[in-house]
Image (cartoon, rainbow, N blue to C red; front, side, top):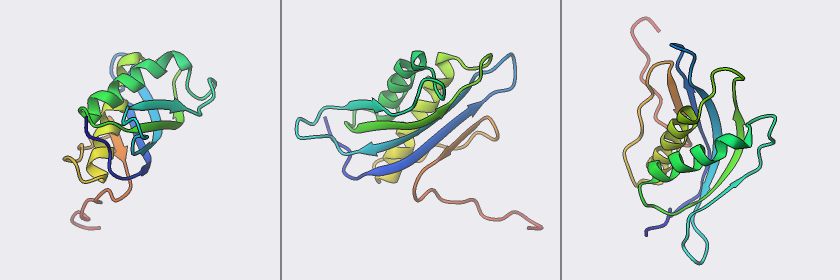
Length: 135
């Protein structure tokens, strides 16, 4: 298993789908190269009132999918939820996009594309869109 070669702090992903009650998900994570054993690791510092811990397995599953076999130490540093609209699927999706963004920031993959207002992903070095006409 390959390891993430550089640190990628402050990757955020927000999923806001406003059709049929969600899903809504928001996460912020720091990605670090794996430790001496080279194994992936997931930690969190987010209190339960910011992100209920019941969603953590879906976040980690999505991040592992997004990293596509690249090992990293991932520290979830912030998150948010909605009482009605948050679902495991939304956190899985946010995790997947965050993992893909970390790979792109490390030069190991293609960056994920924002999907309008539904999915927003930010990472260090993310290219900003060119200004449109009239701006």
